[in-house]
Length: 222
Image 1 (tube, one colour):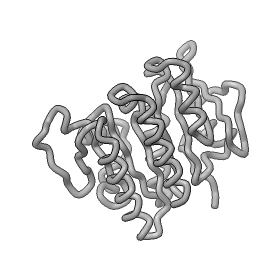
Image 2 (cartoon, helix red, strand yellow; image 1 turned 90 degrees about the vertical axis):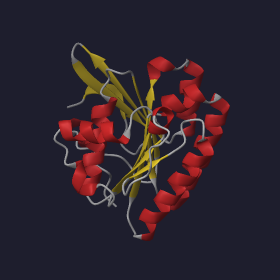
Image 3 (spheres, rainbow, N blue to C red; image 1 turned 45 degrees about the vertical axis):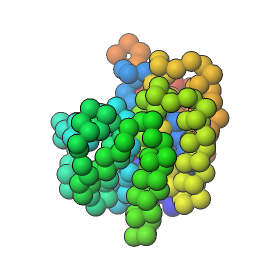
């Protein structure tokens, strides 16, 4: 199977794209371009007939859709078909919110069991239709803030193990500025591959380790 392309030209040319079935940790601060990376990845995955399960912990599903549309990414045509959202944020502020055909409203970031069940069920629905599935966590930092880190690590071990067995690719977005070095190191150890992004002098750069074509020195990303 050809690797999963991100839609970012220099990244795909140097790395060959992402390996399916692996768990990726995407590290960077708020200005590093993590959102741009994820949104382009989603667009590329969907256009190549992959299914995407998008886990939200820091914004509502409507905000996410608005951000895709603002970037002229035609997300609406995939909603409820190949793109489903697990909204683990909105009920914290709006307890009466209910599910719809493409977004499931969860109980909030402290209910990791609920998130695990919802993710497993959504993955299973896609896999029954013989679709290749990509899980994206945007972002992991909020789960770490609201829960004991050890509880989150155990949750991630379970999620990563189950996803690999099912052939699902997983991407965790992590804000490095929000966590201590030991938390970052533990997440790295739970992941198969590491993508690091940074902003320097107005340009964005990346490294990639843990894949068949590593990029160990920072290269500019377009």
